Image 1 (cartoon, rainbow, N blue to C red):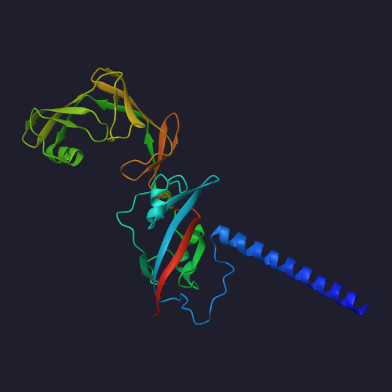
Image 2 (cartoon, helix red, strand yellow; image 1 turned 180 degrees about the horizontal axis):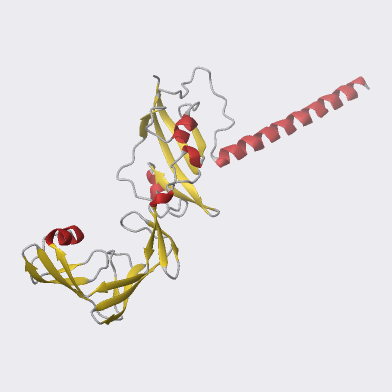
Length: 281
């Protein structure tokens, strides 16, 4: 009887032991799948990041477009090359080289939230750092501009030599033709007398003109040319980035809203960071 009781007790404890092992395995496995080192036990002798240390890290940063995450920056080639797994933001620029990012923690080289996020990390550790807007890139309302969609211009315009050079970024020659940067159409330099330049805009009603090379989603349609006046209208798509760095945020009947803030300004930022090396201060 005692033997049976002892065997049952042992079996009961063994059953609970294996249940506990299974639960721990599930938790650890889940965290490993998520790619986060939240349940890693470190030796007290390992180096840990502190303010003033020099560190080297691999990273990629992303923001959310609705429910979809999009990468805006990385120094990892596998992330930069993989647009299926890591779709990119409008403003993403492919890095010129891929190497660990080196900086001194707390020196002001990085945004505040990134600096704070690496503190306490160990060599080889990977961590998701979430940076709230107030510790990331500030948003400046003054950098949001509105452009009138309607264009009214004279076919013939007289300007000074300085005005021409500032507008066209080149020296005019009589009889030469140039592309007017703001509108994308040709102008003829009809006359140069002293410091004065006379230009003739050579446009045709019904034609589309493209101010930005290789950007067909922003163009100007000439509706009419009447009485020496060009009547035209700008057409553009939302969420495209212009060569001057502005992002088109809205297109109404009369206005186009262009945001010249960085795309990440005012947003919550997410960084997946791996510490490669720590040089203690």
